[in-house]
Length: 453
Ligand SMILES: *[C@@H]1O[C@H](CO)[C@@H](O)[C@H](O)[C@H]1NC(C)=O
Ligand SMILES: *[C@@H]1O[C@H](CO)[C@@H](O)[C@H](O)[C@H]1NC(C)=O
Ligand SMILES: *[C@@H]1O[C@H](CO)[C@@H](O)[C@H](O)[C@H]1NC(C)=O
Ligand SMILES: *[C@@H]1O[C@H](CO)[C@@H](O)[C@H](O)[C@H]1NC(C)=O
Ligand SMILES: *[C@@H]1O[C@H](CO)[C@@H](O)[C@H](O)[C@H]1NC(C)=O
Ligand SMILES: *[C@@H]1O[C@H](CO)[C@@H](O)[C@H](O)[C@H]1NC(C)=O
Ligand SMILES: *[C@@H]1O[C@H](CO)[C@@H](O)[C@H](O)[C@H]1NC(C)=O
Ligand SMILES: *[C@@H]1O[C@H](CO)[C@@H](O)[C@H](O)[C@H]1NC(C)=O
Ligand SMILES: *[C@@H]1O[C@H](CO)[C@@H](O)[C@H](O)[C@H]1NC(C)=O
Ligand SMILES: *[C@@H]1O[C@H](CO)[C@@H](O)[C@H](O)[C@H]1NC(C)=O
Image (tube, rainbow, N blue to C red):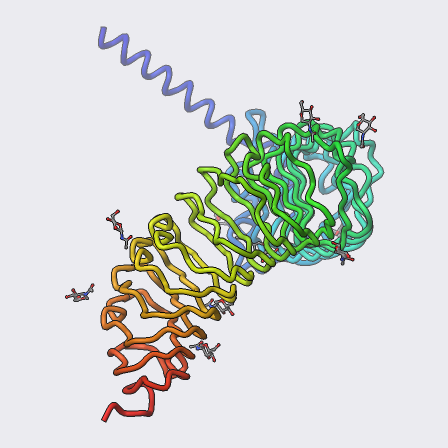
């Protein structure tokens, strides 16, 4: 019995060993191709962690950034963060033999020159191409028929590409991720053009020079999980009502105005987690509304929102209501719903009234910014907010003394209590200068020059 088990174990062991070995033995032609490729790439060998180790004496499937299949063909090449500069070698000889290459990642380098369209011509198996965070420029041209391309993920974000969004991408029926943000793509674009991409999961067109529009019945893309359309010159809010998988939506920095429609909170069948509507001209939230339970990032800053301050869902960890025009006061129990919140700002929003005591229950807070309002009353007791790194209460009408327990906030790196009506002796903080306390007539003691006498 035990012999049998041992034998069984041994055979598994050898079987496993053969598998690992064969998976790790790269074919000589693949090795020579990669070495020639390395030879044609300019990079800083003192900063490189992958390319620098590619050499004849080591088996190429264990080189940094290289993955092979069982037959020893290279399938994945990850050359991200390798300080590569200059153009992507375009010669056919470099890529042609890599016929099993599915994944090519050259993100976060300093690549220059044009879009290497020969990659698409020579790499028939490529389904994942990431050239983001480089300095590639010019128009993206491609002469290969989209029917012959297998691309599923294309990331060209944060480069200097210009001109219209290349037509071939709209015909890539298998495309799952398309990220073109942070370039200089220009022209008008209707989202309907993405209608063929039934597999589309993530779309990012943010921060280009595009003028994006959405015709009335855009609805087909049923798998969309993330839509990023920041700075797309949108004039009206696209009707994404039927996007039942949507978890992330960014419509910031557009020209959207009026009410925030209440259907937006039902997106993704109520599973919306990230919403950025900042830098628009919204004036209110359409009522009645119920925030989705799972929403954890809600950014409404830089709008014209008026009236009641919306009470966020309890899981929100990033909440930005700053630079609005609420003209109201913070609800009494507001701090009790911020128990998981790390970042909360409602600065510069025309708030009146006092800072509610419940803020001490927002015990996860790292950044709290209530500056530039007309808040009155005392600074609440928040010595228990142990993770607080920045506290900005400047330019309000707060009075009373600075609570001693603020000195218990050991993580605090930034404090601004300037331009209020605070008075009395400043407690003994270790690190802050007078810039944190100026503009309070009644305050005295270090670091201010005025002594308490
Ligand atoms: C080849 O690379 C390996 C591992 O990075 C290194 O230990 C070895 O010294 C290199 N050999 C030569 C000849 O550069
Ligand atoms: C690659 O390097 C060889 C030799 O250094 C050079 O002749 C060739 O022009 C280079 N090709 C590309 C595309 O950079
Ligand atoms: C909506 O789509 C249908 C068919 O796809 C089309 O006939 C109709 O004109 C479209 N309506 C609008 C308002 O775009
Ligand atoms: C949403 O889907 C329903 C049912 O499939 C359809 O009747 C409606 O027109 C769609 N609405 C939009 C805005 O696409
Ligand atoms: C929301 O969008 C604005 C402008 O596009 C950006 O500055 C901000 O960082 C975004 N907020 C979040 C939480 O990502
Ligand atoms: C923004 O929208 C308003 C109408 O809501 C329009 O008058 C204005 O021209 C638009 N601005 C830009 C820059 O498109
Ligand atoms: C608080 O918000 C105001 C207004 O948006 C901004 O000017 C200030 O820099 C913020 N304070 C901190 C510490 O980020
Ligand atoms: C803080 O939370 C505790 C426990 O949930 C609650 O009893 C208390 O009333 C809250 N404090 C304020 C000021 O709301
Ligand atoms: C502040 O810290 C001191 C010593 O660490 C402790 O005795 C005191 O109770 C704390 N005060 C508050 C209000 O947390
Ligand atoms: C606090 O805010 C005031 C008013 O905006 C500013 O003058 C001062 O420099 C700020 N202090 C710090 C430490 O940033």
